[in-house]
Length: 416
Ligand code: RNT
Ligand code: ZN
Image (cartoon, rainbow, N blue to C red; front, side):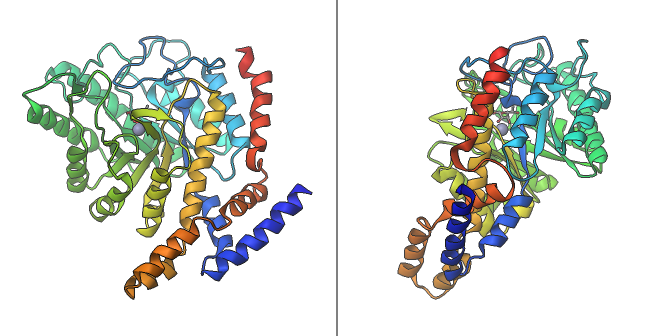
């Protein structure tokens, strides 16, 4: 009965969209192909499996909702469950601190592909591709400066770590026959006024140059800019200007985290400028609330606009979509599903934009008509297409996933 209703609603939606030149079947097919890189750190509040330091590096997970994954098996089990509630095939984004260290202390400058062999196996068994991140935070040598540290020994430690991580990413990419995207975000910055802004940036550029000089065919490196971290409010070495210029001159992928800009800034507007000069984008889709708070991604104007700009720039194939938030105050699995599905909604909504007609109006100088169609497009039966997408892929439609997560909570996470 419900299925029949969803199909009926979709038939109507298909006709409505067709009338303005939009092919809903094609949009659904494109969305099915769109992988989203699921950040493993939502399962455990960015703790990882080193038994050491508390979360540092200017980021913070707030909340203490019960059921956090405490070890590698629980993280994997949660991710396997997440998969059952999402249409499409997705990627898992690992941080170095999630290595399979078997209870041994493996320092960051000793890590190797062997510590990720079981992840590679698990990913293949479960139909996931892997992405990767070096980890500069939550370590005795993290301090305020890692790759830009004036102390050559500390700097060298982090260079070695990041080089090793690139090799791990390469091993992952080779095993999965698809390049692994490795993100480099370092927290480096200063709490108070610094009079050596240029010096640290020189050091960061030098360290990065050394790190990326090794050719590794099965991985792609991206670097992530940031506005500021907690406790590092006055200065960030890897600012947006720094990485924009760095990526343009090195032809490197740029990581655009939607939480990493001034709150009144239009992040979506950066897409078309960046993509003119840099090869690809890695997206960290997040939700800042007053600051880079990493709230769960929702279908809001910022996220909708981001994907509209990507589609309008014909750049979905040059953009890698990943999530980056960590909310410890609500059911963590629920947070995953809300954020991933919201991202899919935003992509779908962008794919359903009547672009041909809008561009025709614009070319003809028909400003009223363009604005009118943009407005009307907002209330077209978008939800019917999204429901159909989920039904077609055999995952819960609409709010059905709430009870699935409640059941998993009763049977699994509440017993932790
Ligand atoms: C921090 C960056 C970074 C991290 C993850 C854990 O501000 O957004 O991407 O969130 O690496
Ligand atoms: Zn990020």
